[in-house]
Length: 332
Image (cartoon, rainbow, N blue to C red; front, side):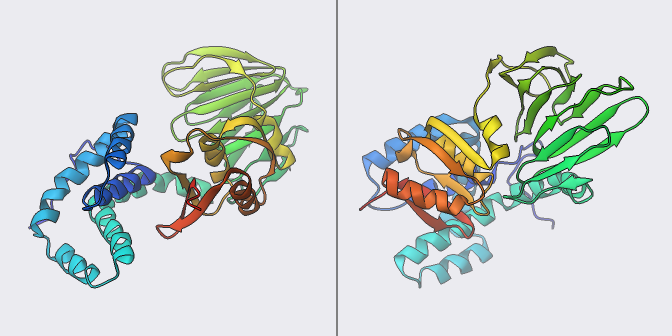
């Protein structure tokens, strides 16, 4: 008899970091010494994002089999865990639950990303995590690839086109003697300009266009909505819609100089930025939500940046879940 997934057929895979958070909360709330403060923090986390609620529902569904210890492999694993010290027990139990409950989801993500991974491997130009690269195009235009980025270049008699498969690029476009348009095709839409400098970053659920010089037009992939972005402006868009135009943020300029320049940036946002350059996965606890950071930080040495933040902000960086690192307030 084939195994039946606990997920419905139309289930949207849950991001790894959210499934990990849900698992940690699940294990913590089973403890005898759970406090009212922790329960309040859980409620805040639960209401923050519909995906948090989806992850928790998956755990609740699976929780019945945990309570009854019906699954033989899970039973063997938990029995083995009970023989370990308490700290190791909690760590291992979280890993067991996470793998059993979200394994199907992760496999779904794996399948969905295979095409993009193949495209990355076969891309004309690409960078690894923490790497940057500059390329010169046939017409004199220049492209700088940021960390973990992949692009294809397609120049022909009628157009100059860049396909952004993943990541972030800054483009200095030269005017073309043949008057061919310069296009950047991303997952969420097409940008076009006629001689300018701009930055385009493809995030998980949207794309950000930031213009430093000239003017660029963006057209969404599905709805075909259009808007023109001028110098010192930026805009976020997805396949269906375009958000409000905002002033250009310095982070879209500074990375090409190898730095992350910020002023009173929320520490949580800063960690999300730094995470793009770090070989481990960075995450954070809710206790750092009120902290801010200012300064010029070298993105090529993200480990040094973390050490500096530990000293300046009284935070601590702990390794957990294999290649994850968690940033929280220092307990010292």
